[in-house]
Amino acid sequence: MEGMIVFTQVTGDLQDINYTTGDSWRYIPDSRIVALNSNKSEETIKVLTEGFYSACSPVISYDGQNMIFAAQKRTNDIWQIWEMNLENLKARQITFSTENCIDPAYLPGGRLVYSKFTTNKTVKSGHTLFTCNIDGSNIRQITYNPHAYFASTILQDGRILSISRQLYPDQRDGMFMVLRPDGSKEELFYQGLKGSDLHSRGWETNNGKIIFIESNNNDRKGGNIISIDYNRPLHSRVDLSSGIKGDFYAINSLQEDKLLVSYRSPDDDRYALYEFDAENKTLGQAIYKDKNYNVLEAVVVKKQERPKNLPSEVNMSVNTGILLCQDINFTDEQSEEITSSTSKAISIEVMGIDSSLGIVEVEKDGSFYLKVLADTPFRIQTMDENGQVVYGPGSWIYLRPNERRGCVGCHEDKEQVPKNRQALSTMKDPIILPTQMKEIHKNRVH
Image 1 (cartoon, helix red, strand yellow):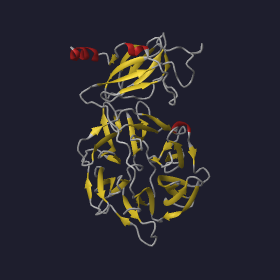
Image 2: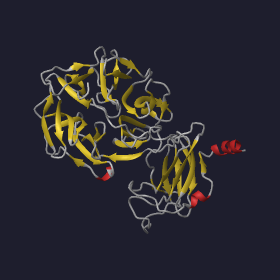
Image 3: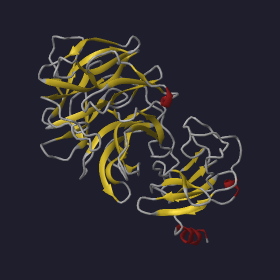
Image 4: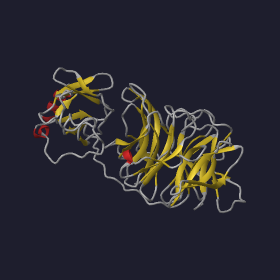
């Protein structure tokens, strides 16, 4: 099947999608996965998922031999992850979860990542990222924020790129987050225009771009083609389709500057498969269209360069992680010099899901050095000498067991790098939070 195009196809009108739950967006009922030989237009498409009630989100393995996808065998079944051998078209079930699983992606090293619906005290209720071996064994949860994670892909540097949306205590716009396959070093990669939604997986091209579909709040089905630079994702947004009427549903890299897009013109009721010239920002001729079916996510069957297989620092025998901040008064809203009209923060409060984990006075240089319970989400707010909040609370953070992380400041420009100096806080032992962990830690040491 090398060179063939594989895509999700669904009949009838698309429903309004829900970016929070994934309904009618990542979970597409009554869908199927088909294959098309674009060089032989006279050939009909081949249905690959015959016998499934719903099947979507196809991803091709790095050697081009297999395909993973999410599917329901029968109506109202739990969504599970499956893999198909593209030579004999035999499919085998990978996950046997009691909750819905969606959006699989191959990881280097014989593992895969997927989103699973999870409800507990830590993440509240949402879609969490899990990894497992390709045979479904050795399942590991890797995200612990009260967020919904969808539509993951793997960058060539080995990190996972996933759409993440905060669900608690309030809902926020979706953003691209990157993290290592062990869940460590999670950070913001791209945040769209206010009120917009990230609609598709982000795909990395061979010329250093990340491409995806971003919709505005007036369009609950599709959006525009957006490109950002891998080297400067927060400040390189380009709308490639601004001059084209209609909307786009999904995108993938084809070759060089050629993209594979799911597009619907203002005169059409259905999305069809087109080629798109990224350099000239022009839409080509339709590759495939059917008046009865929508063409959604499409991928090409071909060998691909395997991403880096990153080493892991996670040690499950350790129940804490380390967090260092150089200066809490360094923010993206001001320089390092605190103005007379701005209160200087002298302490931080570390806030858990349901309660405060503790208040810590920072060093004279504004630094703090914490040892925090692993896999426990928290937020930080800074406070002045009167106990009034200066900044925050910030976004959710969690540390994997044995993870060490550092930041320049609080709510700082994400492109900033730390000064080459030793923070005063690191000249002492880290402060242990939550406070009730101190006695436990002392007993283990002795």
